[in-house]
Amino acid sequence: KRAEGMLPGPVPGPVTGLTSVLDVSEGTVPSGAGDSLAKELQMLRAEFAKAPTAHVLEKVKALRETASWESAPPETRAQTLRFQAELVLALSDDIGPVEQLSTEADRLAKSNRTLRSRLHAKMHGAKGAAEQLASPMDLDEWNLRMSLLLQSGQTESMLEQYRNPPEGVGPDAESRRLHALALITERQIDEAGQEVELARQRKPDSFSVRFAAALVDYFTALSPATPAEVYVLSPVPVPLGLVKADALSLAKLDKAAAEFEGLAADRKSTRLNSSHAN
Image 1: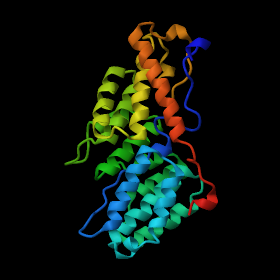
Image 2 (image 1 turned 45 degrees about the horizontal axis):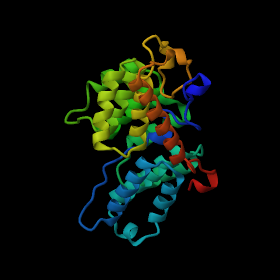
Image 3 (image 1 turned 30 degrees about the vertical axis):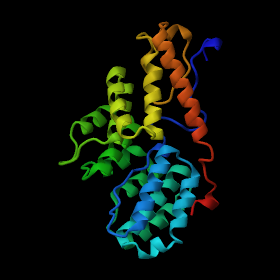
Image 4 (image 1 turned 45 degrees about the vertical axis):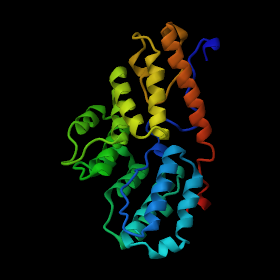
């Protein structure tokens, strides 16, 4: 807040550019003719991407009591169970339901490396989980590996991975968001802004893309003299002497502050009690 001589602090709660709340795959749900469960699942993925709250998890759990569940092919039911598990991982510290859901999904369809890697990251840290995906096979695995590399502080490895996607895979909005975050930590703010803009063109309402865009606006307002340690994926207060004084930069700062406040409001009711995880 400029009146207090400092830039705005971080968004309330555990929100950073790479918080687990933001790290839920969009997935590719096989949608056959009449597969209404797949359509409902995709809608819930989009809803969570826009506002990552526990309400979405309750809706996913409710899908298992519908006629759509009974008529859906095994692969779609497995996708639904894995998405539920990802939400529990993102919203709760209780991993028990995740292991149960993963086992249940594996009985229905081929085992999924991304969910196992997410669980490993929760239990043992991101570095080992990234190693499990050393040779990503598809878009979800590629994005998750890049996210894990960033979480474990391996920015150079993440940038190298971005330059070498799996065969036949190109960047989606999530890939570009992650690339932008890596560029921010390297203080390449203009380049990060270009990537964020491409991500926003595809996913303008995405919570995580909005956060990345606000980060870019925030860091755009800082002086080149700002210490390197400030360039982390959660905005920290800095003295006003490190803020550019031109009108455009101050407008960017105000825009970032407004977006962070909006994101914090959208994060209400995010955390779960363990009794609601399954």
